[in-house]
Length: 231
Image (tube, rainbow, N blue to C red; front, side, top):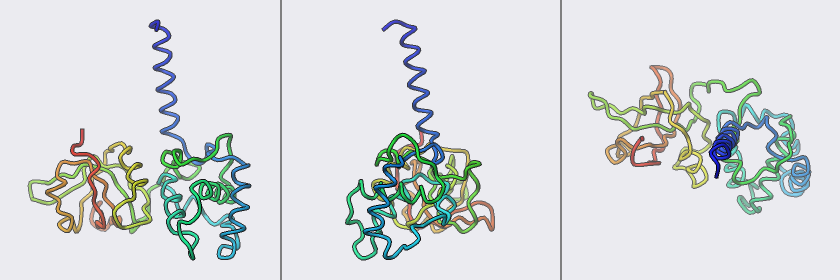
C-alpha cells in the first residue's frame, strides 16, 4: 500500500471510529420501516398493558446519560409482564424503534441492531446533563485504596443511569468494558461487602445510588472487575 493511501485509510478509520463513539439517539439510529414493524408487534403484544404506546412520555429523560443498552436490556428481560423475555431479539429491537418514534426521536437510514444499542448514547438534544442526587447509577473507574484505608473510584467516568442494582448482564458488561476512563473521583460506601482487596487496582464497574450530600460518592449495590489493571 502506498504511503498516501495508507494515511488516507488511517484517517478514514479514525473518523469512522469517532463517529461510532459519538453517536446519539438524535443521529437517526432506527428506520421508519423498523418502527412500523415495531408498532404492529406492540399492538399485538404490549398495548393491552401500555395503551398509549408510551407516546411522548419522556423516553429521553428517563433513559438519558446511558447507552441504549439499558433500555433494550430492561425491555427484553422484563417485558411482556406475563411472559418476560419471550419475544425474539429482532422483535424487541423493532419495539424499541417504535417507542423512540413516539417520543420525537428521529428515524434514519440504518436499522437499530444488537450491536448499535451498545454504542448509541441517550441524552437531551442539547447535550449531556448531570443526573439528580439519589439516581441509581453505573460508573466505570479504578478501585484505589487511600492512605487512610478508605476506598475510592478514581479516573472514573461520568455517572450513567442503571436500572438494576445487581451485577450486570453480559450485554451491560460489554458496554462497561468499552467505556473509557474519565477524570472523576467517587467515595464508595458499603465497599467492605464486596471484598475490595480482590478488586484493588482493577478497572471496575460500580453500581449504586449517587450521593452528593457530603462530596461525591456511590452507595454501592454491585462491584465487578472489568480488567485486572487500569492501563
